[in-house]
Image (cartoon, rainbow, N blue to C red; front, side, top):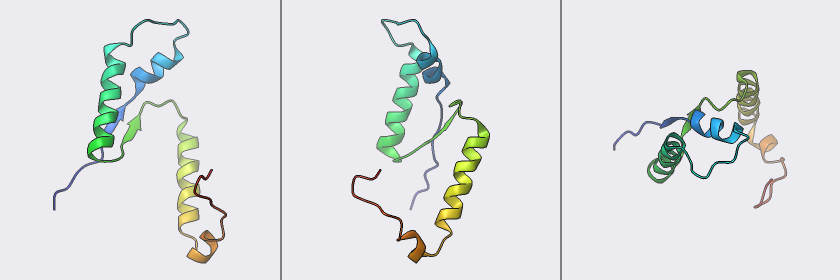
Amino acid sequence: MTSTSIPVIDILPLVNLAADPTPTKSIPDEAQNVALQIAEACQTVGFFAITNHGVDHFVVNDALSAARDFFSLDSTIKSAVFMTETYP
């Protein structure tokens, strides 16, 4: 069995591209490289972590805390949460 590490991808070039109010005719090489890294991670590992996304670390920590709280609940409580095939 081989071990695969989770790819960590710096998406700052995409954040900068999205924040630029001036329309461009071409996508910068840095942003294209990020897109290629994401595609590679999805195709080989199935998921990835990102850095420089611009989301405040307090928001990230609160989301992680809420997820830990939920998943630590008894399965009977978790199964009571209404879910559909197309949730949300």
